[in-house]
Length: 161
Length: 161
Image 1: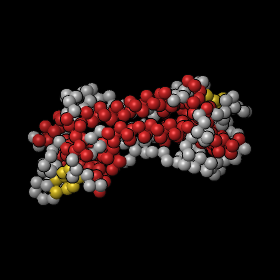
Image 2: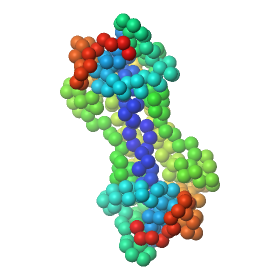
Image 3: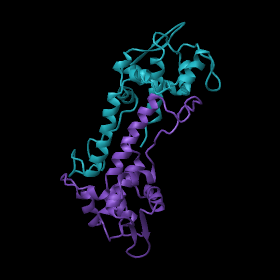
Image 4: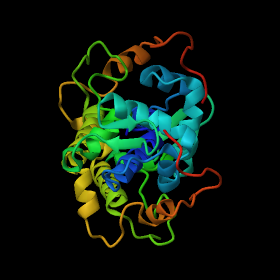
């Protein structure tokens, strides 16, 4: 049981944009800051754009920006936009006698998924930025990116998304 | 976020064995009953055998049996034997400044994983069998397998594992 890499990358990207309000971020800046392959970012931004969470501003100084308030975006919103938490709605064995009624095994598994959904739904991106664990999300790479230094080999920032 | 198919199959297989105490089950019977490809079962039984949860009895009337009391096997024992719940122990971005201290984002994700671990650790296989949701785990296919009818195309029961 684990969070998919796509969901993890989407969360990093959204947190990154949340940390750069009013400052459109290029795919290269986001890739460097989030340590996500540039090639992977489109897979992440396509669904995030589709649900209106982010948008791309073209041209000089263009890049991706958040379209919603950081306190209106939950972890669940991000995760479900790219790879929804898998609830168990009907018997995975497709047993006719079970139908939509789950056995104790699958009900237990679905209950766990429901708890994850609930927890993720309660945590807003804004909270993560204000949270003072002493470690700011992506902080180190934020600095690097602002200096225009790539956190991974290759790629200079400043390109349009 | 979802339970891996390997973990799902392992849970089905263990529940199946739990439902057949003192009656060694062949890979074909388990595959039929659990609707798991026979070829996939070895991937599931290898780690379950390694941790001593199941064992294979060779020869006529042989098959897999549970080696532990059903009330001593938790969902977490089964899941962790085949594909452990992925906890986040250190910064996935490998940020030197974070080290083993997680930022609010990854701490939140790990907290969710910790809750899943805790819940899975509290649910014993025995409970699932006694649970009266009105739908017994794998019940329909249990009947099929006992009649020697394959729940999926091909494969007759009775082979040694």
